[in-house]
Amino acid sequence: MADLRYFCQSIPKIELHAHLNGCIRSSTFRQLLTSSDDQIRLDTLDKNFSSGDTHSRMANVFEKFALLRSCVTNLDDIRRITRETLEDFIDDNVMYVELRTRPRSFDNGKIPSSNYIEAIIEIIREYEEKICSRLILSIDRTQTLEQAMETLKLAEKYRTYVVGLDLSGDPNIKSFERFLPVFNLAKDRNLSTTIHIGELPDEECLNENNLIINYKPTRLGHFNFRTNEQEQRVIKEKIPLELCPTSNLLTMKLTNLTEHHFNLFYKNKHPLAICTDDSGLMNCCLSSEIFDLVQTFNLTKQEIYDFMLQTCNLIFDKNMIDFCQKKLKEFFLKQ
Image 1 (cartoon, one colour):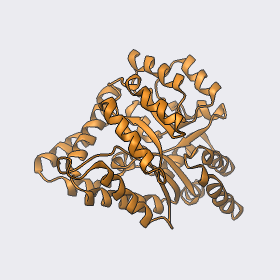
Image 2 (spheres, helix red, strand yellow; image 1 turned 180 degrees about the vertical axis):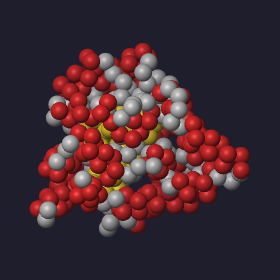
Image 3 (cartoon, rainbow, N blue to C red; image 1 turned 90 degrees about the vertical axis):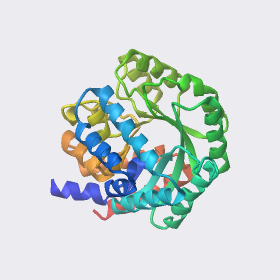
Image 4 (cartoon, rainbow, N blue to C red; image 1 turned 90 degrees about the horizontal axis):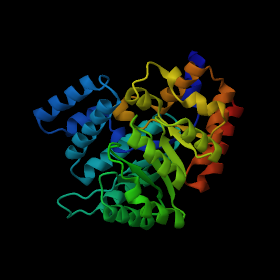
């Protein structure tokens, strides 16, 4: 098993669902907190994270994000988080990563959201020889249609590095229908889309699943809660899934990974990507996510390699598919 663990760590990997702020190192998060009250609040959130039902655990996650957002106050902060995130992915032998982030301004709008994106791109360029990084711009479920349109405009402006549009945020807010005009425009303009789906076990969430599946985004994130009919539709239409085992395990309140829906879709040869979601907040890395699945479902080195090879086809920057597959093949030939 130690040999398999090393294999999972050393194989070149692809990360397709990573929220930039959620990748923050724990030490950095605490350094950015300026008050003792915030430190105590974070301690309480950490302590209570694994207790309660799915709704309370999701509420905990978004309270952490709100706290994090409040302490990231300037472009140097976001440069630091981006730099450390890329260094951590490089250490984990990730060769291609799509970082998703919600554009934001600073200093009451004096520093516009375009500067925020440019600061991230600056660091991406700094590490280009070590890792290929692309951006997915996130629309938050709490935003207005006008704000979402602005995010789409930013995605088009920075198309060299921005490869897609994401819908994420508090799943208690069922707002996909509001943003459908934006996502239709994205599709018309050949911009890839990924949408968080099925994050809560309630009827409203399941109803929204149908709207999202009807839209048929380029990829779907999570898909934790679904009906059998929705499951079969996604399988039939081969809409790729981004699965985040540690995150899903915690928010779905699963006893262990045997209950995770990875195996159901894997057995159906469905297009899948294994991801970390929020590696800093969830205290995980891509190697450990893959190894946990390898242990749980008894996967072989050949199966891991084949899986990573098919994941290459799911990346939004299609110019990078051949490069990633070539690196994987070169690695596997040496084994």
